[in-house]
Length: 391
Ligand code: AMX
Image 1 (cartoon, rainbow, N blue to C red):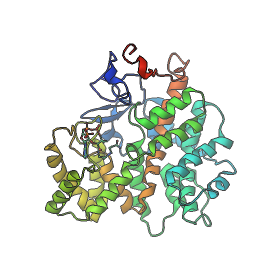
Image 2: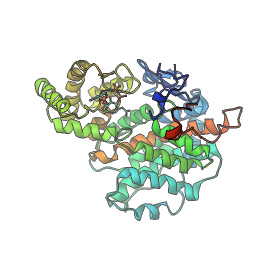
Image 3: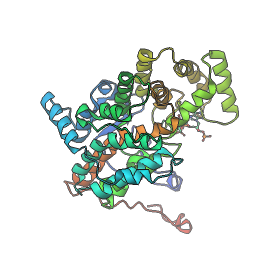
């Protein structure tokens, strides 16, 4: 089985495997996580459900050290991250110069690249951890500068914790900070990693294989995450839920069937690898039942979860009719005060800087007895040669 759980490991290439997005083609090993079709993602062997309520900092430690920290290691690691959380000068000017109508993911990719320009130290793990430590303030700056709320931004307090500092800095008016913190902590842990071959992770590692630094690699990874078929599905999913606008089962079923007739995707359902409901969906549903059972969007997704698997199950080509991670994340973010869906993928990107960074460190400093994975260079075949060479 591949690290992403696919049973379709291709051991002998044929012409049919070309131009297929490398699906099923084994290309390496992954030390941080694997995904099984029914159990979902596991971080360093732990099923995600066992980790959902951990401090995000402990999961950063886990993905880097491949084991959970002891209580004293946990506290020392939090202090270490806090010490690293110093944004280089000039980052605010860079962000201020960006067009406010650009997508927040454009801002995130540029922001990370800019952090590297004056803040890199050219040591893989140092840079990966520095980036994780600096993300809360970068994220808050993106929100506040885009919203013309930079003035009055409080001083960064990294000792509070990654999420807690972001919530303190972003300071959304009227938001319930406790609920916001709770949702973001779980969101961050659930989205940190998902095997080695997902597009953004693969892209980040490929860029790093040319020895571009962590920041440049991560900026490229964020651009890979940006697409609607990858990370931006969480934005699309809440927009889909809002279009439904009801939790009545008959009305929801009618809506879903009409979408299928119109050949539009049923967002929040289906997966390339999973063949059961994503455990990350179940965790977020449980969280929603706890914090927002009567929220209108939550009532709609609760009904979707009941009616959609049966409807999609009637369509033989759909291999997984069950809910995926994106079904509930937007609803929860919206409930705690993040009402602009355009920001949702930046939270996904924030979380992924952890897993992608840890995987880059592994590929650059651990694999091949520390020599690192060589420069990525898959083979492409000239169309005229395709008949003769498929090696
Ligand atoms: N709604 C409508 N059609 C769907 C569907 C869904 N939820 N899930 C699968 N299908 C269709 C596919 O588009 C494909 O159609 P085609 O053969 O005509 O191209 C066919 O069913 C077979 O698909 P599959 O093998 O079951 O899945 P896949 O690997 O091709 O696609 C995914 C996976 C996620 C893109 C697809 O399920 C989908 O579009 N879901 C809705 C969008 C969504 O929620 N995306 C987020 C996924 C989670 C994530 O990775 N972030």
